[in-house]
Image 1: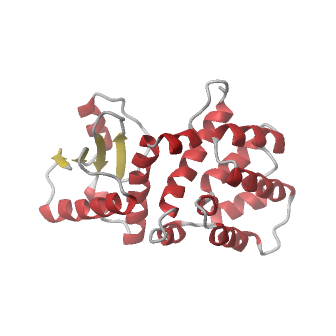
Image 2: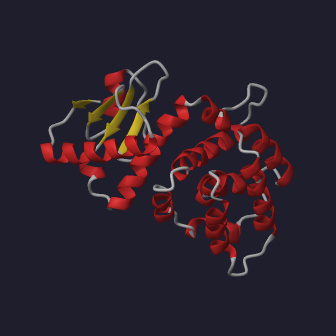
Length: 241
């Protein structure tokens, strides 16, 4: 693993960042021999150095900038922001970025969220992004020692608000899917734990048309974990928005 510093920072900060990155790589079984870590204060500086497009939206303090099959993986890290986070938050962010490397390089994992050539509309692109998030968390959940990091990071309040307020539309279903960490835990094989987390959200008597349809939909997704099946069942279960 090679370190390239675009800004000056203390040796202690760099060592701490590298320690946690190395931990995440080891836990998820991702080789470190072709990884380049850029130390920066702005991810766009790394993109500029690589000749890539810049972005305007705010990003996590660690970001996989390039995950090419035949090229080194480039990870951009902002130590001043990353090390300000609580330990549990820092670790789950790192795990998700490292899991992304695994998802992008594994043909089987890639097939879960890659869009078939036969389908091309905005809905399928949103489904793909939602399933990419679920696949990343699935990779983490496959390790029994790492599931607790997902549980600690999971905040069901946003899902609860959506379940309470949503109409049975495609837009709402995709939004909830993108947040549905328990579904990833279920899809990883730990159905009991994932379902328990989900039931804790709804056991207060939440019962409306959207929630009933979404629970049917998430059960289908768990058992048919790929874009095409998810997309087709989504359009069948919910009105297009």
